[in-house]
Amino acid sequence: MLGTLAALCISCAHAQTWPAKPIRVIVALPAGGTTDILARMVGQQLTAAWGQPVVIDNRGGANGNIGTEAAVKSPPDGYTLLVGSMSTHTMNQFLFSKLTYDPANDVAPISLLADVASVLVAHPSLPVKTVKELIGLAKSRPGQLTYASGSSFYHLCGELFKITAKIDLVHVPYKGGSQAITDILGGQIHLMFTGTPVTLPHIQSGKLKVLAVTNSKRAAVLPNVPTIGETLPGYEFNNWFGLMAPAGTPRPVIDRINAEIIRILAQPEMREKLMALGMEATPSTPETFAATIRSDAEKSGHIIKAAGVRVD
Image (cartoon, rainbow, N blue to C red; front, top):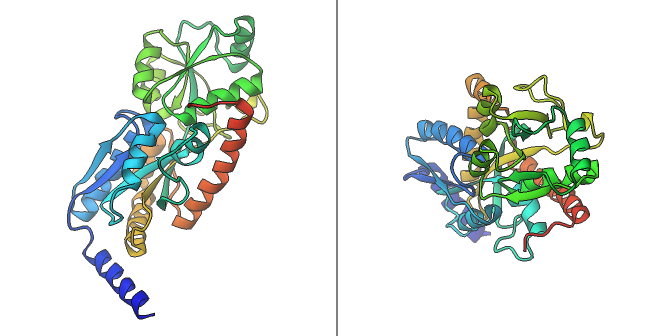
């Protein structure tokens, strides 16, 4: 009993003096993608709130496994955080035969940050304007149309689309969304599943053609763009991002970060900025975030099994 009280006192004292030095937020994907954009927006607000630099550390590779491993193996002192996603914490455990981290037990969820509108875009040269036309073209050219993805989430968007539409598309994986954007703009790839933050400027300029959103409802930033589910009933794939810490991080520190995230995401200006990029602020309790990870991992496992997808 005395030992427990002593540990609690030390933990509370740590929270009161925290943060006393810069904080590192690991993004397990290259710079320029949706996760990176969101992390930098939130990081700027945290820097202003805490008076300590919040440094974004991009650690791309292996569908987010490299950066996630670096985060969970860091000291659980509140000075290393991670922006986790559907890819890193609900999908990779089914895509890789071995993970060097436990997505359920090696992290301490802090708060969900945002849901992101995800889109299916095409190079303007592809002779389709709708999902129905794309399905028809793909059926007439089986195995000839390519689609890019910069993470396992967007890979699974494509696999679910293939299963639901009963078509054969060729998947071309990339280490991050920004690299894939370069190739689809150049016409090397026909299609891409990705987030709106990295594609909106190209959609608005006409350099990319948006066919649909993968989410269960239309995106506020693209109100005239239908969901895939409007053509293929039952199709929906929603993407979230959330802030995490290594397991064992003191609960008072977790609670302090959570309170700051809730305050930041409640600001009308912040919510408007996110919405303009196709993101919806979704702050939560650590417990709600943990429950979301568990339920979406179950759903992802079913999809991956049905698709027969493995990375290694």
